[in-house]
Image (cartoon, rainbow over all chains, first blue to last red; front, side, top):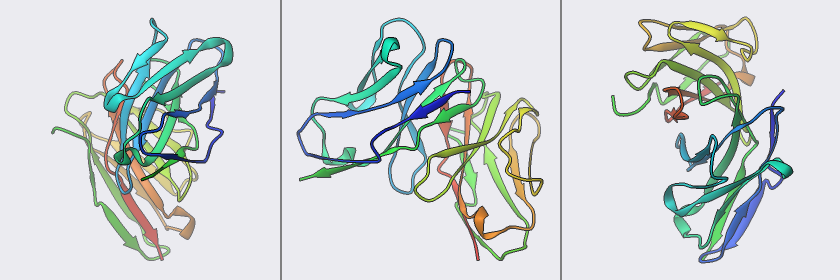
Length: 114
Length: 112
């Protein structure tokens, strides 16, 4: 069965600092990987996705993520965070390109210090 | 529509009552999903529709939960005899193959 682990429940960074949110997955075949962001009281917005090809994927809002098969990881990064990036971030793994269910991690809450 | 629409946005109900939650997916999206998000928790899969059929309903927590989809479009999630542990945000998402999910804003259900 697929599973996703986000080791950090809560991260605090200063505005302008770099960010890396960790995600590890367990899946036997080639995974389809996603990062979503959820602002308070809102639904989830897709930041980026990896299906195949280049292992470094670019997303919206200046985020990127790198797929590392050897480490079963798909960490999310941003070079310089903005106060508006404060939100909950979810990593998810799917069996294929979106036709079946995604399994989500527990989420990482990001706080930005001014 | 432009996005996934869920109604109501908030629902407070008394324990033991039945509730219906509605989801209007993006036009043309054949797949539709229901998830539940409890306070401080991740997303728990409930059920997945492809067209009007539900190939995977493995996440429905009990027989008090049911869902249907009609016309390959609108879906309704019904919870019978609500319990306090049913309190959560219920999220609906739709997708077109290969493009990931688009989520609605959710229905916040509070059972008192």
